[in-house]
Amino acid sequence: MNLRTLLDKLLGSADWGIHPDDHKRPGADAPVRVMPAPSRLYLPLSQHSGAPARPIVLVGQKVKKGECLAEAQGMVSAPVHAPTSGTVLAVADVTAPHPSGLAMPAIMLEPDGLDEWIELKGCDDPFALSPAEINKKVAAAGVVGMGGGTFPSAVKLTGANRAGIHTVIINGGECEPYLSCDDVLMRTQAAGIVAGVRLIVHASGAKRALIGIEDNKPEAIAAMQAAAAGYDTVRVCPVPARFPMGFDKQMVKTLTGIEVPADGRSFDAGVLVNNVGTALAVWQAVAEGRPLVSRLVTLGGACVNAPGNIDVPLGALAEDVLAFAGGLKGDGLGLARRVIGGPMMGAQVQHWRVPVMKGVSGILALDAKEARLEDASDCIRCGSCVEACPMGLLPSDMAANIRKEALGEAVELGLKDCIACGCCAYVCPSSIPLVQHFTYAKNELAARDRATLRMEATKKLAQAREARLAREAQEKAEAAARRKAERAAAAAKTAAAAEASKQGEPT
Ligand code: SF4
Ligand code: SF4
Image 1 (cartoon, rainbow, N blue to C red):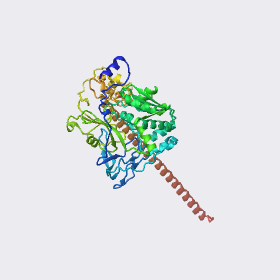
Image 2 (cartoon, protein in one colour):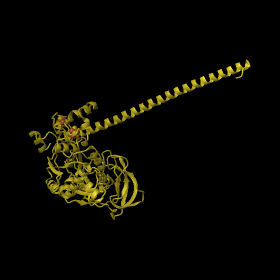
Image 3 (cartoon, rainbow, N blue to C red):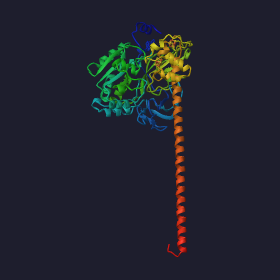
Image 4 (cartoon, protein in one colour):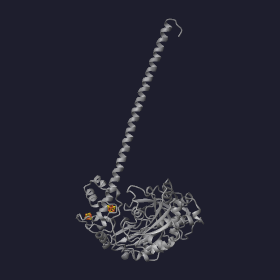
């Protein structure tokens, strides 16, 4: 536990969260580097929540930068565009930037080095467009939540409009240690972000926007306040720097006092939450007609030679980003953990051959100290994890139940409300890997749910089969009885005819 977290605890100045060492500098102050396309790009069809995009290009086809390679399919989906000009090589598997290391289908593109754009169709007065027209442009540009949520933004805007929200919250929290891409975006592109925020207010039908920025980013706050000056509907609100302030529900509660239930949506509370990067992407999509083809990514950790923020073409492999940006110290000697995203809520990966996707905010190469690779010891019932938990849970008790395989008890203690923020594990003096417990238990519960669903489906099928067989047997029996009756009637008729003929009567 560091000094600020300890002070909070002693003074009782916060009832949730922690203050991990932020490690944001010097990377946050380094000039942004723009990475050219590497020799291959791998563009996963699933870079967003919802259905994967469907490829619409052929192998060998030449494409320009910004051209649509795969279109959205279904109600919740987003298209994928070419981050540079080149030739489509294949639809092949690439490793997902996820701890599972599972393969995901991706369009492989060979850049031609020309970086030639399609003709972009912008709009001179985006505020003259209707919400439906704005949503259409945002959807066509493949904009998704850039804070890691990756929910298609147009779907969110349409939902917000229907739900009748009153407030747009723009999340500039960026509370994860090391990450500074949102901070840099706010410092360098404040005007575009604020224009995007105003457009989101217009398209969602909200009355106002509150931009929450942690108070450890004074330059970003100043830049955003200057850009928002004169717009009554937009207010920049400094919030205390504390992890996980950047989590949407914490930001909503801090800015509006509204508590969104763990299983509820912010829409239900009249609020729409977007990240600062998403606001900029919305503006670029509508005003410039520019699809989402690149993003700012923070490169950090003690093992990298030159930490900072890189403008990366989507689909570039993390190993290419590292090679472009100065590589690893000592060729990676001392590397203890590879992380995609932030160290608290990001994904640990086994190698660097994973692509940068729309929701990837960081590439971290951590040494053993940063990765906090310490042996776990027994729980000393100190209660630190309980005090740190932003969701008001009892992490030590949940973990104890999970160790006993008593998952039902863990659920009763609120396991399903856990957001896997890692605050509990961070403050635990016994270095107990609490989050791993919760992840294991949630996966196990999901597997059990799936098995139950399968069993129920099988049972329903068996019941339906039995009912069908019974129905068919009944129908057969009825048909047989009918035939028997018909035969008996025919026989009686024949007998009657024979009798009549015997007696000389006409039949
Ligand atoms: S990981 Fe879960 S239990 Fe631990 S502090 Fe975060 S929300 Fe609470
Ligand atoms: S799990 Fe860790 S932080 Fe929680 S009570 Fe036990 S020793 Fe303390």
